[in-house]
Length: 396
View 1: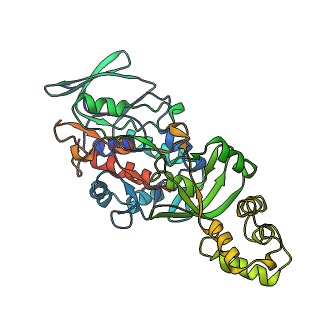
View 2: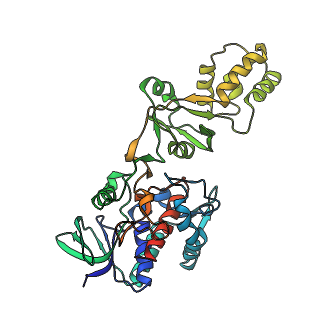
View 3: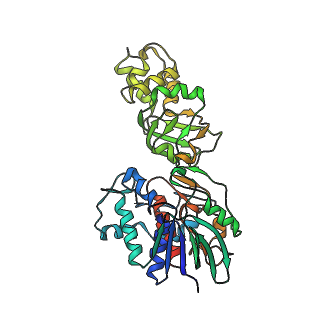
């Protein structure tokens, strides 16, 4: 007889959700994590307030908001465990929360409230939680899996891998899930950092350096994909929600386009400035619409000295192009060190969309960030964690 019915590797969002649901079904569950405390990524998320879901992270509204080699894969789990279901759970626990922007829900208080809710639910479901334990070798046996945990071996009929991706290695993130997948012949797609700041070559960085710390609302585009949110200039390049979002679509060698006046025609703005304040320089006119340091840099790029009142429509059109379509070419990203998620992962072609079970390895499940499903910034990845964990917990 196995020691447990289900062993879950990883006490993060997806792992704890899987453990809760399996335990509710009367399964004997063990949740294991190498960290000292469960839910560490939950604890630091959302600036310590935990952006625990997004009201748009549904199988309908979120259809275009999850990236994967097979974008439709996530829809099955998202349809069975919705944002409303997790919101109801939070309300039942009396955890106050608020909607920030774009459907993003945050705790009013510390994110540890979500962690406490989940660990309490785990214990009420009868699950055991072992933290500070390293996972060693894993072997397939006749009635399940034999796993080295710490200095001892434990067996279970089902194994759920919820160890996440490579993002934020200082918290102990590794590629363990991918190693386990390859060991059992489950495919792994190429991985790369997602929701991550972008960096520039020294020359461009020197130009942007005076703007470090400046933030502005902007529309950032890559091909047909656009995000209008805050953009932040840093000592290393660009960050802020708009950049983090576009980073999931950007590839090295590509350029991005930045509209510094989203929703406005910069040519109209400059024409109005020419009419109202003809003796001002372009950067001074722009400083009424942009942070002053940014307006100065844009004026330097436009490089049209003299008073705006002396400039023709043709010249203003050239200047407006810089404002509405400022083209920048990042050389890289800050990598997994600061990435919020990992793009790519366990190949969804090898998983059952309803249960998250490996098609060729009965009893082996993969959930959460480890899987090739990555959501937009703003609670989408937590909803995927809850939904995929729920799905596996209903079956494991």
